[in-house]
Every structure is written in structure tokens, then in C-alpha cells.
Length: 327
Image 1: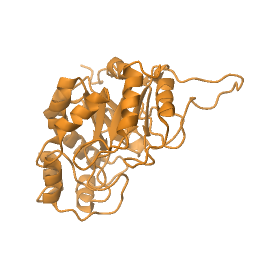
Image 2 (image 1 turned 45 degrees about the horizontal axis):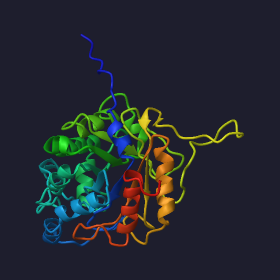
Image 3 (image 1 turned 120 degrees about the horizontal axis):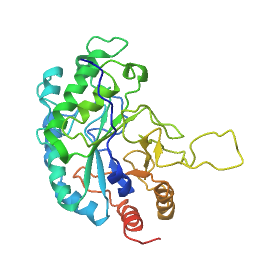
Image 4 (image 1 turned 45 degrees about the vertical axis):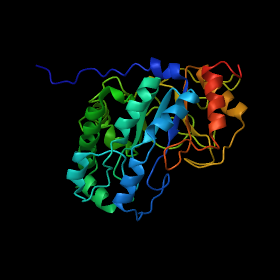
């Protein structure tokens, strides 16, 4: 019998395309992209997660007509907002920096009755500012990053199996060592994607390979483009041999659903609002008309509420795209 793997089939992204836009947030123990270790007692982290108002946030998202919501599980600090026994067994820290409360599960329960999909953000590798976790997760470092890949796949598989279909997708920040993940044998992009989809084979996955324009897809084993941009508001898919016409993005880029992730504020999770409503709405419509989706990063308060400075623009955007206003 042949041992060749079965053909890979990307997830159906029709629901994602029909959403047109959604909200992304960096809810972290520190700040986005921080690379310095933080001195935060585990009890303080647990108190913060316990106090997160999922019902209040769900009401705010519904009022703004946000169709999907993406939240960080964690990033560089090594603090995560959901328990994971596999992670704790590998890292061996007591008490764990994984929260006692499963905030993802509680968010899903609050969002589902309102028709709002939930997705999760996670770096593709060990937390950079947590030396113990980084050392244990990376293990013996080789060119394939074999130990890291296998450890991280086991960690995400536990989460995916627990949440099942209550989680609609993943945005993976990295992995940046592209060649290690493009290897034909597992562990690789495929085995990572399979671990992420273990609990929901219909969930959508993107692997971010860094901030750049034009938009790109790194692998056939992702379902939508990661789309991370900041200052450059991309409108065309790169250079053309014929400069007499303007190129347009199309719904699928190398087979992946077209998607952009950018910031509504001046930085990830930081105010002030940087554009007038008309520009935020217009840029979203620009991609929607090409079959694309736009995720806007918006900050939350520690209590889990949308930053009040951003609520007017978020609401204007939601009503413009899904309610007929500004048409």
C-alpha cells in the first residue's frame, strides 16, 4: 500500500469572505512585540483573566456589528489566557503562566449566541522573553527545529481538541524559519496546520512570515493570507511587466483567501485612532469589492472592554459594511 499522504484540501473560506471585516486585538500580559522579560506575579495574571468581562465585550462587538473577533492567546511574555497541560508538562514551571480560566472557551460561549465567530492568535514559536519556556520548548536545536515544531504542535493540538468547532480559525505569527517548515517530511507546515485543525477541520489557518507588502501566501497549507501591514496601505499585488494598467488583487492569492491585517490605532493595541472614519471604511470596501477581508486591530481595556476612543469608528465601520450606512 502507498504511504503517500492524502491530497491537502484547504478549508472553505466563504463564511470568512462574507464577513468582509472583523476585529483583532492584542490582549497581553505586557505590550505587543515586547522582548523584555516582565515581572508579573502569576496570581495577578489570573486575577486579571478572571475579571475579563466576556459578556460585556460580546455586547459591544454585537452593537458594532463585528462579525468575527481574533484575540491573542499570548505572545513573548509566556503568559497565556487559557490552561494547557501539555505546555506545562514541557516547560515545567510551577505555578504555570497559563491562566486557570479558559478565556477562549468563555469568549466562545458569549459570542456564539450573537453570531460572532472567534479566532485565536498565537506566535509560531516559543515565547521570546521567557527564557525557561524558550529553552524547554526549543529543546535540541537543529536545522529543522524538530523539537520546537513537535512540542508546539502538541500544545496547539490540546487547545484545538478542547475548543473544537467553537474556534473558527487561527492566525499564526510566524514561523519565520520558512525552509524548516517547507520540508516535505513532518514536522512541517502541513503537520502544524493539521494540529491546529485537530478539533475543527473546517477552521481556517494563516502563517505570517513578517510585515511586508504586497500581500503573500507562504504555503499551500494555509487557508487565507496573513496580510500583516502597518504604514503601507497596499492596493496592488506587486510589480507588473506592463505598467500601463493598474493591477488589482483578486479573491484568492496563490490559492489563499485574500485578507489584510492592519491597525486602527498608531500601533498594535495602542491609541490614538489614526484615520478618519471615511478612510477606514473606504479601505475596507476596497478589499471587499475584490473578495477580500480586512481585520482591524483595536485595543481592549484590562477589563476586556473596547477602548472608548475606538468605539465610534468601530461602530461606523460595522454599520457601513454590514448596515448600509455610508453606502
